[in-house]
Image 1 (tube, one colour):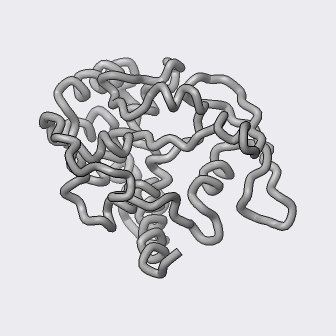
Image 2 (image 1 turned 60 degrees about the horizontal axis):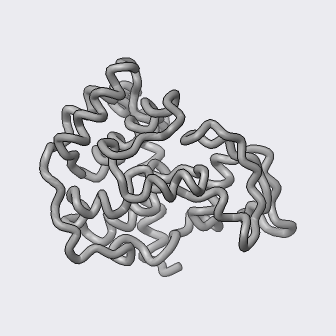
Amino acid sequence: MKRTARALLAGLVGGTLIASGFVAAGSAAPAAALNPLAKTALQELSVKGRAAKTGYSREKFSDGWGDIGSCDLRNYILKRDLSSEVMRRGYSCIVETGILRDPYTAKTINFVRGQSTSIKVQIDHVVAVSDAWQKGAQKLTYARRYAFYNDPLNLLAVDGPTNSQKGDSDAASWLPPNKSYRCAYVARQIAVKRKYALWVTSAEKTAMVSVLSKCPTQRLPG
């Protein structure tokens, strides 16, 4: 990876740790300020219509996964989200097998790396990339779009077919089938949109408010 991209991800990891409530020793930043109530943070987001998709391509964000240290982002998220993972012999960042307790469906999925099996577990952009493009990301610098695309805050290992069904939907048109995860899902979307100054549509905000009404103490992910 080019030095510029590594520098971007080095800053990204630091920013993610701060946003997640991990602050340096001596910092006085309260956890509540870093991880406010989701319903409160939602009110901070701008509400606008969806912009045109003109000019969109994934390459405007990243030409594939970035790296964190010696790990590419896909393997980094697999290591984070899977349990009982087994690494490829001789490698510290290639996950061969593991168990995913899928947040979107509540199913238990046995992950096995392979040409026909890896697709069973996909890495989802919780705020879809094209959705972000139409809600402010096209106005961001390439560095910020790159950070968005490779931000662990916006990435989850999930059931592949369910992720394909989600596509580029926002909360107004798709929510996880696992209803017990919807509050956390919406809170993560709000956290990402807040971090990257992306907006929500009126219908999207209405859907988020409806979900959060069932969990008024839900905070942004930490």
